[in-house]
Length: 162
Image 1 (cartoon, rainbow, N blue to C red):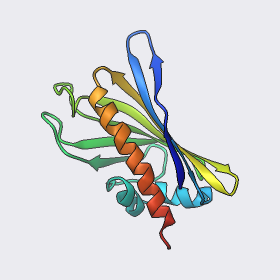
Image 2: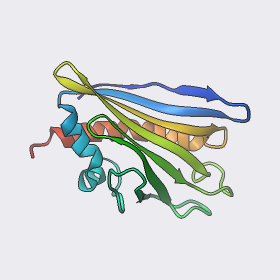
Image 3: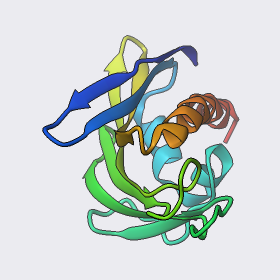
Image 4: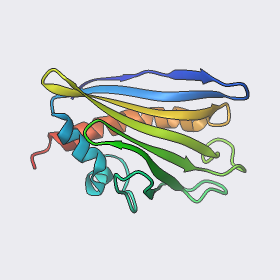
């Protein structure tokens, strides 16, 4: 893996300003190798968190569990929104509570992984979109750093011998 780039993106709607975390990285592996890491529960657990009930099937609902905060139980509720094998995986990422400020505030976002062949390898683009500012500023800041580490971890997982 080489070259991880974090690219903030802002979107302005009538009522709310949203922010997206965008990270791009090059891998020396073909898309199929990265796809396996993105869609196999035991591998996802090694580069991010263990998913409960994950399947790369549109409409499938699954969860991740992280540190609870205030009125939030720490469960991230996800639903697979789009699957194009070896090209794109997208899922809703929802959690938090309206009663929390800062960490654990209500979050309703979408995570999209896009794979594109590039030379002898693959460009991975991760976009986590829909952070409402300023309400989700803490999540945006923390997850921006976290997603960069996650992409580095994906590189470690795909570089390991099978």
